[in-house]
Amino acid sequence: MAKETLTVTDNRTGKNYELPITDGTIRALDLREIKTGAEDFGLLSYDPAYLNTASCRSSITFIDGDKGILRYRGYDVAELAEKSSYLEVAYLILYGELPTKPQIEEFSSEITVHTFLHENARRFIDGFRYDAHPMGVLIATVAALSTFYPEAKEIKDEKQRRQQVVRLMAKMPTIAAWSYRHARGFPLVYPDNHLSSPANLLSMMKRMAESRYQPNPTIERALDVLFILHADHEQNCSTSAVRTVGSSLVDPYSAVAAAAAALYGPLHGGANEAVLRMLMHIGSVKNVPAFIKEVKDGGGQRLMGFGHRVYKNYDPRARVIKKLADEVFQVTGKSPLLDIALELEKIALSDEYFIKRKLYPNVDFYSGLIYQAIGFPLDMFPVLFAIPRTAGWLAQWEEMLRDPEQKIARPRQIYTGHDERKYVPVEQRKA
Ligand code: ACO
Image (cartoon, rainbow, N blue to C red):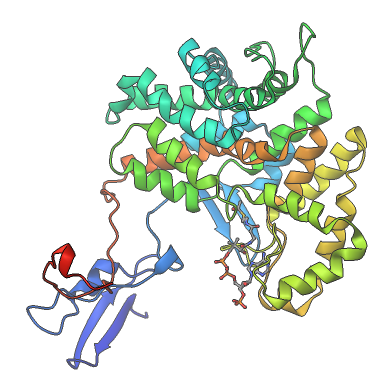
């Protein structure tokens, strides 16, 4: 049988090294044995942006980017989107198995009773500028929650961890909805614990004078499906952030706030907002070819909602969302931007530039159109992403804490600066 090892010859010294291969990887630390002499620190691997580095072992989410497969705890995401609910999927992601009936009832009721925010947190939200971006409000308020629950610092206590997980899962939709109401100058709507979790979110965002808000069931279900599709995505930028920040053993509110901050960027959770802005900028189907040309000419313009670090095939979530968009548009009426999106997709999928680079629509290409049709403003899109991703962040945080191999995250660098220099007093420095 072939040996599961890698033989390396160091041509600087002529020495051979045999490195074990486990699960298709070599351990970066084994490279440190490769030295030119006793004074040598040993070989490092250089991997900016972690293009080819596994930073952990994880049993939560499986992605095969070439085949376009995404599974949570072994279950295909498309099947979960068809048959399950977001709360059930969150339970699966957090605790590893689909819940039994009593388990999901207990979990739902736990989440339901924790949806309210401390009144001081409400006052805190009131203090933001009248036009504050809701994502900034969300990040700050999540971080601020750590001051309300100082016991959250006890991250070695399993019971405490579970308690904060429930709180974060429950309060995230309330913070999200209130960040939106604040930016609109609308009165804040308190949670209605008789509603399902997506209906409650819609109620907190949309209710005005009515005594109870009852959403259209298609919209309620669409929101739940979008939440299933966004619940986890293994070691992406925000998940790596929650693991890195959490590895310092800070409380989970601070670690999740850091993850939400990472999600805010336009190359990550801000992409669906950027897709809508791009579609509005294109303005009409007839302008699509000129826009595609602009992208290909490389003037810094990207086709937002296309391409993915991991998927080199159609993003399986985009497939589900495209179908979902049809169902939502039957209720809300078709978005005028849909035709532009379809034309962009059609041209891009048959264009040499995109084929060669394996650029396919990702989860964000159509999700923004659905959110817009439901009546959510663009700046709420990343916030709506952060709500379900909280399940993934917390599951990954828990897994990181339980992993005996994990330590505080601390990468190395290749130093490219000056060698040692002597301090020069200010009056002797040259311009
Ligand atoms: N439009 C045009 N060209 C693109 C695009 C795009 N959307 N994405 C990648 N490319 C090109 C690059 O210019 C590069 O071309 P080159 O080889 O000629 O230089 C090549 O494809 C590879 O691109 P990279 O930037 O190296 O790919 P990377 O894996 O680093 O980036 C990313 C992935 C950030 C998602 C990128 O595809 C992108 O910017 N897409 C648009 C933003 C977007 O939709 N983000 C959402 C991602 S999904 C999520 O976070 C939920």
